[in-house]
Length: 172
Length: 106
Image (cartoon, rainbow over all chains, first blue to last red; front, side, top):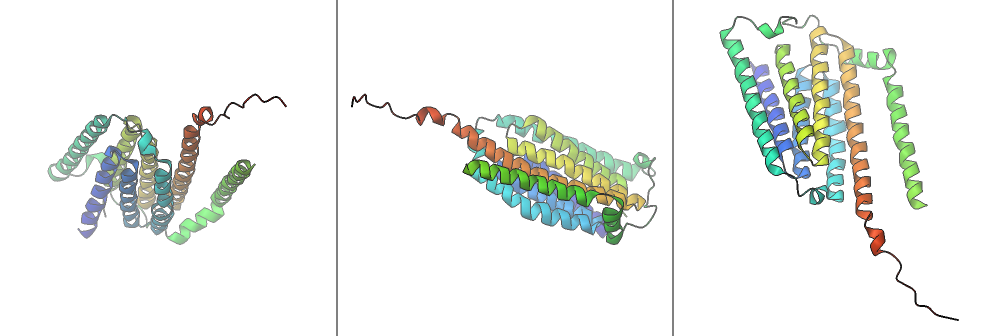
């Protein structure tokens, strides 16, 4: 029961904040609601027994990168250049999305209360077929069976090379 | 245990919101956030199926998706900042032209 209540709160927070994000006029406020969405999704990762994803989401994105995004929004003043945006379209889209999601929730509740079982899950097992993978298993897969660390390292090196090149080009 | 279909509905909702935001908004930052929202929906799907089948591969790829999301956010913001700075600099050369020099015969 507690898990279901937590899921409803987290999922509602994620959906509502993402709807608000795409309907905000200023990008800085949108970034703040985007942070809220990411934090709610991080909670859902924790509920899915994925502590590594929780930590990665919470630290890498919500805390570190969004600060840089806010800094970029503030520095570039993108909102000033885009002041002629058709704001009513965003509002109309937000209302349409909210209506769709409300319909979706109503259908879900109707299914749960008035139909035997859940027809939508006919191709999926109702309960997990095995225990959740532990963090150790994930890290073992990460390091032993795939080349993801190497790929990430190469990506970081690529970013560093581009940054160095841009810096020296600017100085020249 | 919450059924997987709930996670799939949440993922679908975030995907839908992301697509709509990327389609209708003209603010480039909101477009970027909407694309990130689509990637977040993907990682929810991966984590949900990893929980359902007890497979570590789903969480690993979700981890990779999160890393890609962060890198894309960072690189996208940096590119936008650079382009916008250059954008403002485009009309500047006309105003920064050197003033006409007086004709002086030495």
